[in-house]
Image (spheres, rainbow over the protein chains, first blue to last red):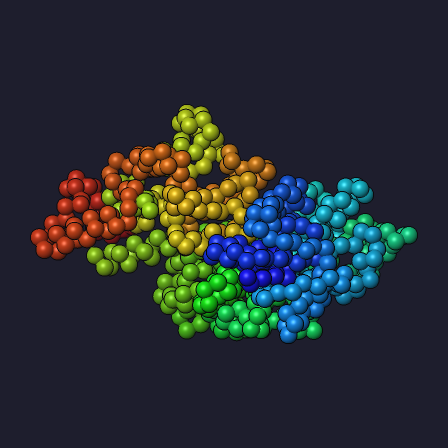
Length: 410
Length: 198
């Protein structure tokens, strides 16, 4: 009977395994991962730090391995994949053979000064191991103030989680606005100002943390590139991530896959390590969001069991709405003719190219974001109606369009 | 699989569906205890669009984009009833579901079912307990004008096709009671008058 092994125990691997079982696969499955936990949701783990129960991070249940008849080999990362001998080896020297491999190792935090992590009080913010360590550290050291270095999605998430826990936060970001990848200049400034106003988080822009001070291996403070320093016993570094593709390719640039999610005739690859085409633009890239990982894992599982199916492509849509009720939604790319609408805390902008949505930003309110998403994904021509849609006073653009079409038809 | 079907032309915007839904989902199941309670959860919303009214709620799509987008394991489907259900104990209010829902059927607030002192996503649950006991969703039961009907797609589609054909051949709409027709005409005129029309 065919033996399936997953490298990684993250969201893509868990979905893949669950789907295999749902599709009727009865062969042995082994999941190999570097952390000692059941599959957990990286989107949820900051809520543990914000004070919510640990149990809720196991989004497919804490009994996942037993429920799906999986042998788990945990605690050591896979360091090499040998497709010829169909063998993987972990850092602790153990090896595992496979007939089909599912490689979904995700990404890891990237550090400019990795040696800082040797100091007690300096943490990354990516894994459940990180969260548990930060939680313990905050409790043991009675931490009341923290510096978060990096104002991307993960950095802002970290800052808000710790802010929600009651800590005084300084967020340091080198760009002119936070969330600089998922916002344009105007939207980013709007979001940054609102986040500042709503949380009181001290956001320090156009700056980096360029040094740390320690006493007997214990963090005591940080210094900033724009001058000045601050006493703190907790520093979170979230300045970037890189895909865990070394074991497959020797480099950390991701893994190229076929439309069947195959990186090699016997190796499927999915999730934040896989390079896939964008479903609208066709551009290859790593589109690291949960819905993409799910669709990729399902494509792979179906292909393994039934031998057919292709991946429809990824979409770079994301939303940050965590710990406060102030969502920031974005998708596509921010070029083309901008159409903007703002009212109070709500700010919307759609970029139009050839009458179709090329990208959009919806800040402060999720209403209508799903409709805009569907218009973007389907590349429907909306140049005549887009202004009305984003500015409908009751945020009822979809229903307005639908009833209007109905009235014309009848 | 049965669903709630909307015939918006029959909606009189009386909001009986909203009230019934709120009572059904309130811990007290009582109108008077619900009054002034900010945690009251209403899963259906009557939207006014020009002179039309549309009772908006979850369509329990299949496949459901929200279910595929939820990274917290909070959204599941009841395979027996087809209902797409949201578990507030697991929900982190991250808005991934709302970001992809074409119908704006998911909203956020601190409801009675929210456990952690913050907002959660909430949406129509098709009154899953009621329908599994052979009943109807509360909104459908409360709708006096048949704008909301709980039934099988094939039956509804067949009925609509028959009446569409009748209307085409005989020129009369047997689905629309004359009084409702009159009400709609009045509402359309009033709407036009207010917007400075005729």
